[in-house]
Length: 333
Ligand code: FAQ
Image 1 (tube, rainbow, N blue to C red):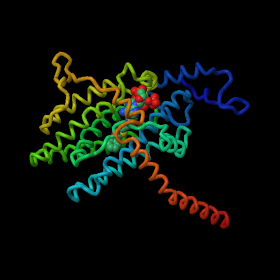
Image 2 (cartoon, rainbow, N blue to C red):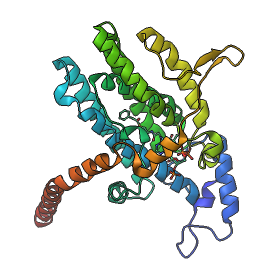
Image 3 (cartoon, rainbow, N blue to C red):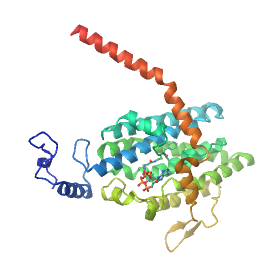
Image 4 (cartoon, helix red, strand yellow):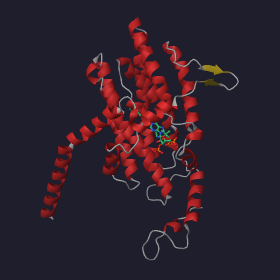
């Protein structure tokens, strides 16, 4: 059992007991994570666990913030007031998700400035999917249906992640993502009941987004360098390939309801497996996008950097206000 005694400081004030070696601590931590116990910010944790969480949570936060851009492109062109308010609410939710996630990452001892600096200098990753363009209004529906659909499939198991602050943030995020997915499907269903031109627009959007959405789940399990440790520590509960398969199985019947086809000649239900078979993913395209050479990587990063630069006066004003307030309180004391 992982005990409190192990968390007592050394006599010199350093954080570890000399008698407890690191390996024993790690073994106790792994047992604890293996039993499904929740780890909190002030608990001892192996450095690798902390780093993996900072990596994943910050990439996730960046994805939410960059993910506002493809949809933001359509706010001024939404076809009705109702669709515009729904889209605005969704984009604001994504901004909120980014903020909860940056806050969860900060509990691990990194600052928001460090994380944003890594994004702005191109060192940090964010989801490959947000480097693709939104060419028509149907793309907004497809982002809700497929991109949020994939995000939910991946994120529901994260509500049971071993790290408490991340798991708790994910509960609220998943509730909001579920509204996002439904509004996307509703938008597409409306278009599917419309004109031939609208149906063609929906099909074209599905054709362009289908494969990039399957890539969202990450490389095959055999090529996923982080999965083994993340699964051992209870950060990830289900592997990349398992989640991708669950997503395909759930989505194909929804597509049939919409009357769309999927751009994969190998897609068919396999009775023996009880799952849909699907064709090979173009991993060259995936790694190109992840490594900064997708259709819109440069534009996405430039938009984030410009937003940060243009917001400098807000940060300065907030700091000046806080300094003035502190001076007033000191004078009153
Ligand atoms: N894009 O070893 P693994 C959303 C990287 S939020 C870019 O398998 P891991 C909401 C990976 O980082 C969408 N990079 O990695 C929304 C690693 O590189 P590293 C984001 C990717 O972490 C909807 C390397 O490849 N969701 O959509 C991608 O075990 C609509 C090897 O991969 C999350 O972040 C990718 N697709 O598994 C917003 C969920 N896949 O870091 C707006 C939390 C992999 O070693 C509109 N994250 N890589 O240099 C996760 O569950 C995991 O991090 C995975 C990757 C599953 C994404």
